[in-house]
Length: 480
Image (cartoon, rainbow, N blue to C red):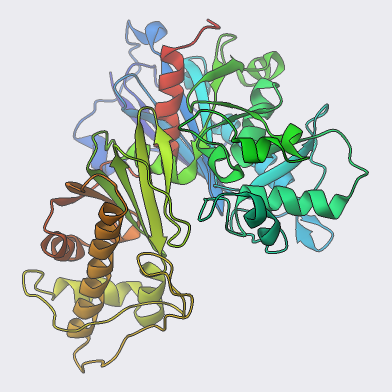
C-alpha cells in the first residue's frame, strides 16, 4: 500500500512517501496530512508490503548557502522522504560559527529521517557549496581556522597563485580554493600544526565515516586538481603546502561504512556506506538527469547559470568558464550576473506573475537591454565595468517585462554560443531549474530565442542529485 505523510515542525519540513514501507503513527504533536497533489495516486493503510525488508534506499544531503535538506530515493529514483532545515545562528565572537551550524544541521536532518525508513538506507552522500574550504587538524579533524566561504575572495593570494599556475586556469580567481589555502598558509606563518584541507562536503562526510583526508574530483577542481590526468599537477605538487591536500576519488565512491556509534544512535544499518560527494551545482545538474552530450541545464535563480554536458573539456578563467568531470564526459559552464536579482529590483512576485500572463511569447520584443543588478559582468561578456542597460522604459509594464525576459534569453543564447566557440559540444536541449523555471511564458520566449527545445526539469533539488550519487556508490560498494 502507498502512503504519503507530510510532517512539519519548527525549523524543518519533511515529506515522506512510503510505497513499500509500513505507515506508522507519529506522536510528539506532529501534524500528519496527505499531500493533495499526490492523493490521486496513492491509497493509505497499515498493511505492510511483503517486499518491505528488501527495500534499498539512498540518502542524499545538500548543504547550500542558507540551509540544508535531504532526499531519500529508491532504486527507481522515486523520492521516499525529503526534509529541509535552515542553519541555526551561532556566533563565535562577532562572526557566525558556521562549523557548529553545519554540524548541528547534519545531525538534525538525520533525526528528521523517519524511523521506519532509516533501517532501509544503504548509502549516503553529501554535496556542499563549491570552494567552501576548511583547514583542519590532521589528527583530530577539528578546524584550525574559520571556514573560507564559497564567495569569499582572497585577493592577497591571487598574485602568488598566478605566478605559478597556468594562465587562465580555474585557480586564478580570488575565490578559488587554492587562493584560500595560500592565504591561510601565509597568514599562519611557519608555526603550523599538522593540517589538512577539506571542502565543506568532505568535512561533513568525515563526521559520518571517520576517515580523514578524502575528497572528490569535483570539489578538488578549484584547488588545482587535474581531473583529466586524475592527479594533482606538477606545478602544485612542488608547493610547500602540497601535503595539506586530500586524496581524490570519483564522486559517489564508497569511502567507509557509517560510524558504528552514529548507526546505533540513529538506527541506520551497520552496512550503510558513506560515499564521496560533489558540489551543490553539480548535484543540481545530476538531479535533472541530463545524461547525454548536448543536454544542458539553465538555472534561473538570482543569477543565470548554465551547465552543458560536453565531450570536450574547456577552460577560460576570463569568462569564469571551467569544466567538471562527469565520468567520461565534461560538464562545462559559467554564470552571468543577469537573472532573478534584477527582476526582484523592478517587480514584486505578484507583478511578475500578473504581467507574465499578458505576454505573447511568440511575438519578439524589439527592446534591447542588458539587465544587471549593478555594474559588472563576466559571462558571456568579460567586462567588470559593464553598466546595466534597462532603458528606454515603455509606459506599458507588460512590454517592459517582455523586453527584460527576452534580453536575458539573448544573453543565455550568447552564453551557449560562447561555449561552442571555446570548443564545447553544441547544445541540443535545455532543461530549466531555479525559480524562473516556473514562468511558462519565459520558457516559451527562451525556446524561440535559443531555437531549441526548452523545458522545466522534473527534479531540480541538489539533494536529489546527491541521492543519485549515493545510489551509484551502493552499486560499487565493497564494504557490504
